[in-house]
Image (cartoon, rainbow, N blue to C red; front, side, top):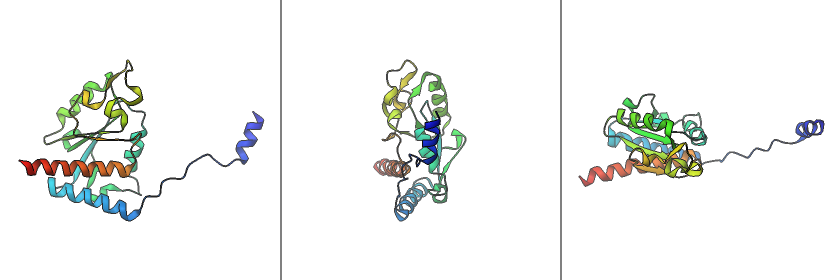
Length: 177
């Protein structure tokens, strides 16, 4: 025990460097998402994040979108506390039996038009939790999903790209009508 204590005092921590995304690319991508939201919706994009039973890896990346580095609110993307104020449900994790009804209620409480985004590999098909007695499956087993964002967990830039792809998909559907 004493040996481990002394080693930990002199050894450098085993952490990895954070990725260094290009500031200009981040600003451009976030501005494109904000402009697309204003053009398609006439206002900011409102997102309600729902954790359906995840390990919280995806939530950490989603919360990073609100930190001082990404600060997506300056581009017109905001996270809301109520599904009644949301345009997008951003769902993470496999849907557990305990969260199934809560996710369905949240989906029905969100006004139309609404879009569901499944963020992360677990939200797509259950991920490493698939087949567990406690898991219903991916988000699409409970509510219809409009977009899947891959990754375990998906980094903030990938989440922004996914939101931009969703808005472009919506624009294409509106133009087709």
